[in-house]
Length: 262
Image 1 (cartoon, helix red, strand yellow):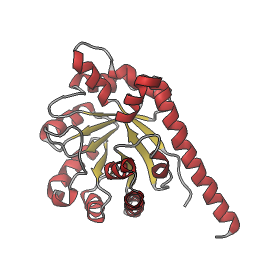
Image 2 (tube, helix red, strand yellow):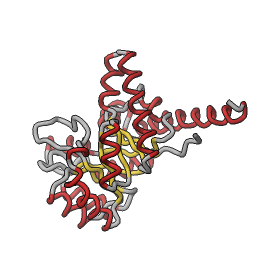
Image 3 (cartoon, helix red, strand yellow):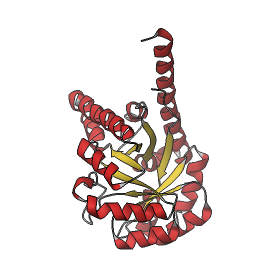
Image 4 (tube, helix red, strand yellow):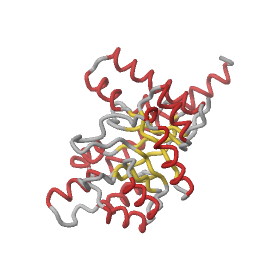
């Protein structure tokens, strides 16, 4: 299939983590968001956690007011977060599992066991004009459940793919990449827009960006860490080049297939 362009969402949570370590206002997540857009980011992702460990309510308010780029608000499925989303009305909300003791999101949302809860939650956000995605593992039952609850999109959890790549286990890497490919195809066939994210870096982003059904990658921690060495603009700009290069290679491959008749 012909691959559409791929968007890059920049997660700015850990800019806020660094600010909160010292207190005060520096570094400012809104300033980081502005730079991210200038460097090639298409949207901004921010996770407003229950414990406010990084992004705070004021950050969401300022990001919304600044209108630098579409805002993707990551949030748990709770009445508090629903009320905040309905008040601020970001471009999109990504519903994620959340536990206080975790360092970062450890896996996908178990949509299959929460269809009755998620269906009205998703519907209320969509009625407010907010696009909704669900952060899920690339499993058939989770994709089918996501379709049932009426979400606009799914974001495939790439964490196990990242772990396989980091471990240098080629068999596990190919298995996890295959799961992402199959999951993306199934989600697109179900009428869902397909995103992906978690643990993506310069070394492993290419194969994921080459999956034609995936139209958005959300990346944060790695880019903020790399920015310590090269600056935030260059960190993001390099990821943009790698993603676009992978996509361009996919388009060339698709063109050659059509010309040759294969």
